[in-house]
Structure formats: C-alpha cells, structure tokens
Length: 542
Ligand code: ADP
Ligand code: MG
Image (cartoon, rainbow, N blue to C red; front, side, top):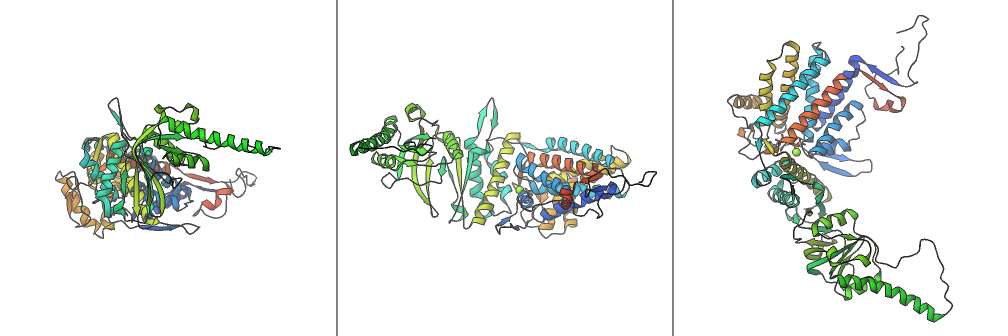
C-alpha cells in the first residue's frame, strides 16, 4: 500500500519483520507440525530414544517428550508455543507430554487441510472447541473410578508409565516402590486425599543395577558421618535438626584480640572450648543421639559428640532439612538454648552407608514418615537419569489418578473411543463446522496410528481392525504393540489417569486454536533470527 504521494510510511522499526495472512498462519502451522514430528517416534512402548548433546558436550538419552523439547533450544515462535504444551502437561500431570504435542501437531495438520478448502479459521476453532468440550464429557462418562486403596490398579498405572523407557526392565519393582512411596506421603483431610510430590525425594546413585533401587521410609542424605569415633548405626534414634553452625562465631570483620599475657591466651582458648563443650552438653541433655546440621560443625564439637556416641552430619541441604521434618516429626531449631526433647525427631535407624563410592547417611524406619526417598540405581549416569524421569512420570500418574479419582485404558483405546463418539456428535452440526468437528476426531486417531507405526505395524490395517472392535462396543480395544493384535487394554492393565487425557486434549486444542487465530507476525529486529522461514526483505511498505 502507498499513500497519494507514493511516499512509503514506516510504522515499525527498521529491521522488524512482518508476515501476514496465510503466510503467517502456514508458517506457524509448519513449525508446530515439525515439533510434533520430532517427538513422534518416541511414543509408546516401542518408541525410540533420542540422544541430545548440549553445547558443552553433555549427553542425555531419553524418550521423554518434554525433556527432548526443552533440550532442543527451539527458537521459532510457533514451535515454542507447542513446546509450552509439553511443559504445561509436565507441570500438571508429569506424563503424557509426547501425546499432547503429537495431538497439537495433528490438530493443526488437519486444520491446514480445512484452510485449503477455504474454511475460515474461526469456523475451525469453533468446531475444535465444541469437539474438545464433548471429549471431556465423554471422557468423564467412560472413565472408571479409582482410589488410593486400588493398589493393583495404581501399580498398573505406574508400569504403563514406565514401559518403553530405561526403567522398563525393573518396572514391577519400580511400580511397587512408586505406589508405596505415594501411599506413604499422602494425606487425608476432610475426606479429600492430597499428595505433595515434593515429599518424595528421588536420589540417584550409579554403580548398581536398576533392580537394586529401593524405597527408604525416611530420607537419605548425601553426607558422611563426621567423625570415625561416632557410631555407624544408631537405633531408635532421637534426632536434633539444627540450622545454625555449631561453632564459635567468627566475627564478620577482621578483629584483633591483643593478649599481652600468656595466661590470658590460655583463658581465651579455654573459654572457646567451654562454649563448644556447652553445645554438646545441651544436645546430650535433650536426649538426642543424632545431630543433623544445616551449617558447619567445629572439629572440637565433632570430637565431643563422638565421645558421647552421638552421630552427626553437617552442611545438609535446606530442602533435605525440610523433608527430615516431615519424615522424623522433629522441628528445625536455631538456638541450642531453646532445645527441648519435644523438638527432637525420631527414626528407627540412622546409619552410615556406602552407596556406590559415596558415603551417605540414611535416616530410615521413621514411624509415620510423611516424606520418603526413592533411591534410584543404575549402571551409568545416563541410565539413572532416564530411570529417574520414568519414575517421576509414574509418580505423577499415580498422583493424578488419586487426585481426580478416575482412570482410563491406554494403548490407543481411549482415543479411538473418543474419535468414534465425536464423529457421531459431528452429525449434529451442519456443513463446515461438521468438517471441523470431524477433523478433531480424526486427529485423535494419531495416537493409535503412531503407536502402530512405532511398533513397525501397518497403521492403516491396524486402525481398521481397532475401529471395527470399537464399533462392536469394545470401548477399551487397544493395540497390543508386541503382537500387532487388538487387545482389551483395560484387562491387560494398560491404565492411565484420566487427567493425562483431559489435560493433553485441553492444551493441544488451546494451542491449535491460538495458532490458527494468528494472521500477523510482527518480529522486532532483536528476534529476527527467530523467524526462520520468514520471507526476506524486512517489513513491507505500508
Ligand atoms: P507420553 O510422553 O505421551 O507419555 P509415552 O512414550 O509414555 O508418551 O507413550 C504413551 C502411550 O503409550 C500412551 O498412549 C499409552 O497408552 C501407550 N502405552 C503404554 N503402555 C502400553 C502398552 N503396554 N501397550 C500399548 N500401548 C501402551
Ligand atoms: Mg508416558
């Protein structure tokens, strides 16, 4: 556009870039599809892993959608919006990140086909929104109830989260551990069960097989016993948790103490010693047999503690101190003067243990531990890291199942059932909207299709068989990725929390809608490098 004087008018800064209309839309859709394409091969039990190498050469081998996308340093703004879907899924549930991203990509891909048919984006977004709402209704109807007492179901949920990941070889043990851990820390208030995942500490240690992973009913601390004279094991231990240093305070600024008489020197040292001894006296008097200190402990104090057979560790992380409060029932004290027996925590056993080549302290057999530790073992760093991610997914799924109280079957069954129901629902719309609702139903089928592809099966044949079973009313008919046959995913124990599915559909639909509504991309010069795929030439004349 030009004004009557043919003078171009610039309203944007020099070097800003702008794409408008279809270009902007197609560009974002393309980017979103590429993101989805990237993680697609990792979906399901037969999904492959990716090796990510950082600029520093650090290596991550993973199958976890959100980890892959976070490490990829994606810059395209449209692609970044899809990465956000994975992050939301991670924060809200902890699992299902790949599913959410693939779904978003497929919704956009199908939208593109509708755009090609000159269907307006607002019609598509409206159809998608209606379909998503309907999906939630259907999910609530077809899902089944579960609670914290359904141990077997919870174990199946944990195992489903772990198949196809590094943790699979020990999935029975790890699901048992994950369920026990969640049960231990869950809290009941007014008939509502809540779980705070933060109370499950995951400690990784290399040097042993995955099967040697264990649940500690308490906290393991990455610190060694301070003095060889201290006991290796303390049974029925009363524990004091201190967050100040057991030292004679050194002054902030350099001070000089002038001593002009050798006897005064001795008196000074004696006084210091007395203060330190006094600390140990106070601890001893409280009945504590274990000292866990967030700050330093003076050598002399260590020595006196050892003489009293008191076990001590120092420089313990604040987060561990807080977990110890929940595990042992003790209080963190700041001043030893205030210490009473009531402040002490309790553990059936506190001991020094060598794990791998590291010295650790175990505070375990706590009476009613409201914080626990899962000690994840594995041969190498890469293995323990991937096992940790899988265990976290499993814990997230168990929590989501208990929190919402509903679960569904996986292996593509729930998506196919939804697709079937939404297709039926689409007939209540006319013309173009109906096409959009159908496109949503088709998009859901990307999950079973991808599971089949990743298992090396023919996606079309597989889908046809699966759909036939659903038509016959088998709502949990899913894909057995090992045999290629149709299976009842529910009775085979391929279970997932309802929340994985509702959250994935919600965020995927939202991002698809958002991207479809964009018809103008204005990028300031600073972000110009982000706009890969933008036509060159900068801002057009107005
Ligand atoms: P996400 O990041 O989405 O959780 P996963 O790689 O964990 O991706 O794959 C999850 C998908 O794999 C779900 O659709 C789930 O139903 C499916 N799945 C899990 N276990 C099985 C199984 N034993 N057989 C078939 N499908 C399975
Ligand atoms: Mg998963």
